[in-house]
Image 1 (cartoon, helix red, strand yellow):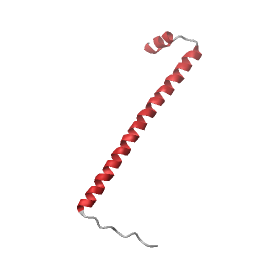
Image 2 (cartoon, one colour):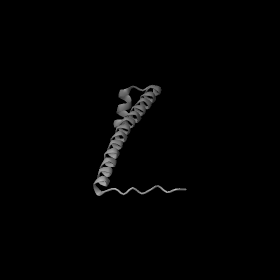
Image 3 (spheres, rainbow, N blue to C red):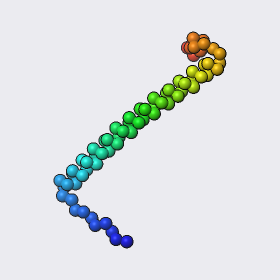
Image 4 (cartoon, one colour):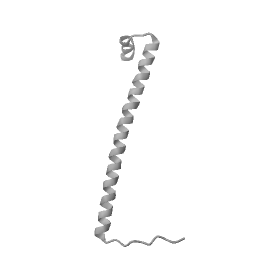
Length: 71
């Protein structure tokens, strides 16, 4: 199996390559952070929906459940 030929880069070229990789990584990080925030919001909404369903099934009013939780 043939090996890849090592490309000798000048320090300037290597620096450009590293800066490009940093920019790509930053873009990836921003996209991941946006996705994380969207997923956290969805998890929160799912939990609130489940809690609302439990309150409805219990037959208690919102005010009664609020009072129970505050005490």
